[in-house]
Amino acid sequence: MSEPEQVGPDPKEWIELAKICQSNQHNRRAMEWKLAFGLWTGIGAFTAAFFLGHKYELPTWPWWFRWAILGAYLALFLVVIFCWQLAMHLAYLGDHRWFIYHMQKARGEKDAKPPEQIPFCSCFRWFPTYQWTWNSRLWMVGECMITFILLALSWFAIFAVTPAQ
Image (cartoon, rainbow, N blue to C red; front, top):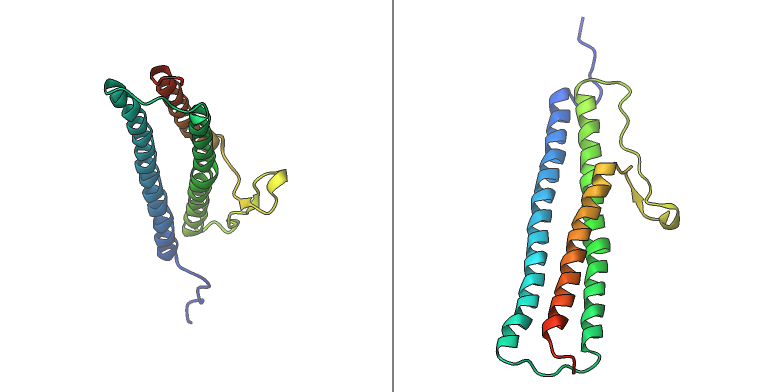
């Protein structure tokens, strides 16, 4: 009597798929921190240029300069949120959900279902994602708040030492 044919991947193949997802998670998290520290260092270097310039007498800035810097900082902050943080965290979440699914299949759980994509929110129904967890949300908010605080401190520091006119 022959053995019954196995349908689908065997447990080792599911584990290999889970390892790929886990590797993606770790690589993405490492890249995220490198980008964050690079951005925060750039904010510090930009701010330091004004302090070092103060030593050598800065020129008088036009009245609109502080508003131009504020606009650039707000644009940078929005890019950080929507083009980097949100995309990074949603991709990380997807990897995590697929990792769990592959491990369930490797354990032989018959009721394991692939992760379901849902709309990000009611205003963005065209933007599918996986169900968020609170730690994912707090992680993203924390990184965005650090960036916001550094941008705000930079702006206030620049105009505390820069001549107004």
